[in-house]
Image 1: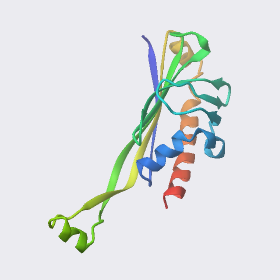
Image 2 (image 1 turned 180 degrees about the horizontal axis):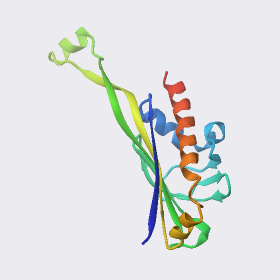
Image 3 (image 1 turned 90 degrees about the vertical axis):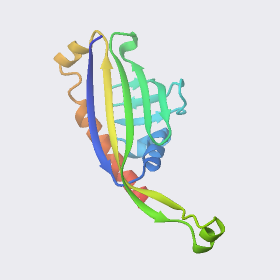
Image 4 (image 1 turned 90 degrees about the horizontal axis):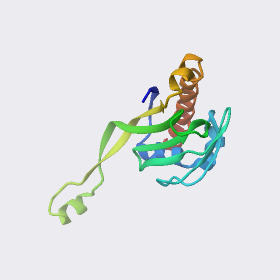
Length: 169
């Protein structure tokens, strides 16, 4: 099957949980997302959600909801399976940690002298991409129908970064 991948990435000074919570709160997309103006539904694998993008309304199905790691939905473009489908993914990867000692001296002595340490995430990377597949994808590419997606995804990335870093401070 013929496919095409449009991929963007951004580093965000926030932990994966913050980023994932923003991505999965569809009711607030209208406040920050410049490409998906409105969205609703529940992020549950197998469930359809509704998203208004620049040129159309879509009803993709959630296919991956891996908490704090990945959100992916699949959409059948033009209503015909196999013609032009799109799987949109947000993948979050931890890039940088800071160790913090969370146990007091008393807690360590009661716990048999073991020191409890946790890691605080300082930075994450968001990969925002869509895999288009189907027999019409080469024609969509040829006629430039996919060209605007990179700028749209980069706009989403920047807006998400701004929101996540403000929440995470």
